[in-house]
Each structure stands twice: as structure tokens, then as C-alpha cells.
Image (cartoon, rainbow, N blue to C red):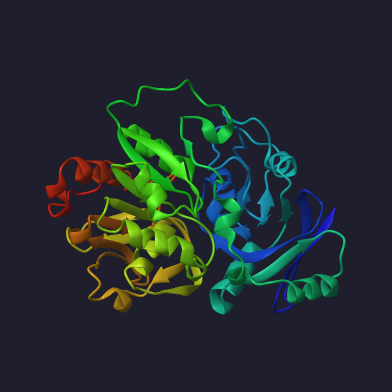
Length: 381
């Protein structure tokens, strides 16, 4: 079946339908990762976005029930150059097309993704739509009549509605028997778009994870008497999340805080900082980040379209601790006096690279040994 992708500037790409043959709409972005397409598609940070993979062949190792980052597919649509019809991998339980169809995701294959990526790099990300049953003019009219990506509170769409205690396997519905958490640190994870890999990594370094809704108040969080709080990644414009900022303000100085991606932006905003939208964002597994204290450079996995303005946090008690070597944007903050720190990239990086996974242990070490808020160890694990 034929399909078209239309951008808000009127550009049209033709291809064939994969997944559900219907209509979808979202912000068109690109990801440069060579592997991990299933993790990307189930990452809540891609909510409301049509995801373009720059790697030319997608689906070659199939899909399975273990590589989910959340319980459902989150991307609004997917664009690929070539969709592999015959996957080959010992873990494969089905093909990409079957996976997309099962989860109701609209996709288009046969697109010149290199041309599309060059378009988005030069013009910036923009709204777009995929359709199998409309003319280009009808699709463009639908785009113009729809709210933009920045106008929607996407965090509220992906966050849990009720608190729960995480157990291994919960994201795929395969919860394991209750474990003995007597000697584990109790970490409250505020869900702005929680990735299952974050919870797995916290569990691996001795944490018991209580996941709370994005609109939880600081009082509700502190009622749990946590040893620490994690601010999760998530989708959308951080400027819309005033309720989350108020919660973080109430937690500052009360409990150790670790923010990841959107959590980094929430920490900065709670301290009086501001954020801005990047032209085409950071999405992929090859972003170099420099630790300004140690000089160490790590290759990181990233998925975000907004960044912290470094000048806006001056004098706030926060210090920029890491920068992106491609464009020198803020990749981390340290708030020593408030026992809070954050990173803009994904240390859980599933499937990789894994250079930064040691930062979860660093969070635990800082809680158990408070002097480590000053004596920061290298995060390589």
C-alpha cells in the first residue's frame, strides 16, 4: 500500500505503508542510532513524534518482548529507508512490520531518509503527518489545523496515574515475585516518561524504586521518606511543566536528587534557570560529553529537543558540570550544597553505549557517603 509523509512546509515524501495503514501526525525528528529501534519506539520521550531512523536498514534483528522501555509503543509514527522483511536473530519473535501493526503504529518505508534528515538539519524539526488515504493537500491542511508539538502536555500522557513499587519485568507485564528490599535504598522516581532501563539500573545497584505520577507534590514524595529522588526523562516542552517545577522546588535541600534528561531541565528550572528549543535536537547513540572536572569524555545516548541555558543558572547554586562537545550545550549540573545533580543524556542507554552506567552507582554512593557530593568519582563502569 502506498503512503505519503508530508511536512508542514509542504514537502512531500512518497513510500509504502508499514505497520497500521492509517493516519498519524506529530513532530518529525531523526535519530542517528544504528541499533535499538525497538527501545526508541517504546521510549516515552518520543511521544508525539514521528521518528526517522537515519540508519538505512531497520528491522534486521526483529523485535521481542524483552526490549521494551515502556509497556507500549510511544512514537506517533516511524520513517525508514528500508524495512527488513526477514529478520535474523536468536532473540527475534517477529518482524518490524508485525511489531508496528500489533502496536498500532503508522509507518512509511522507501523514504529517502538522508534527504529528509538534511531537510530537518537545515530547517529544523517541524510538524508532519503520514497517511495512506489522503492527498498531500488534505494532509497539509490537517497539519495546519492541529496544535503544534510544543502546545501539548505530553508528560501527563505518558506518566503513571498511580504510585507503584517497581519490580523486575513490570514493563512487559512479567513481574517477578516480590523481593526482600530490607537493605536497599528507597528511591522515589518521579515519572515524567520513565524508561524501564533506569529502574533496572537502580535495582542493580541496590535500590528499591517507588514510581510516582508526574503531578505528585513534594509533600507526597517526602511522605514516602525516600533516601533519594530520581527525576526521570520525558517528552515535550519543559516550560509547560509548572507543576513539576513546584514539586522539585519543594524537594531541594530536603533529599538527594538525581535528574536525567528532562529531569536535568526540571532541576535547572526549579533553581531559576531557563530552557530553549534546539534546532533539531540530540537523538542517537554517538554524542560526546565532556566532564569539566575530570576532563573525561564519554560517548552517550541522547533523546531530547530542549537544553538548559547555561547563563540562566549562574548564581543559582548550580554549576555546569558537563558539556556536549558537538555544540557545547549543557549536559549536566552539580548542586553540591543542595545534594542534587543531573545529566542531560541517558546513562541507562539501552542498548548502548554503556560508558555512563556507573553514574547510578555514583548516585547510590553519594547517598550512603555524603562526602562524595564533593569528591566525585569517575562515572565509567
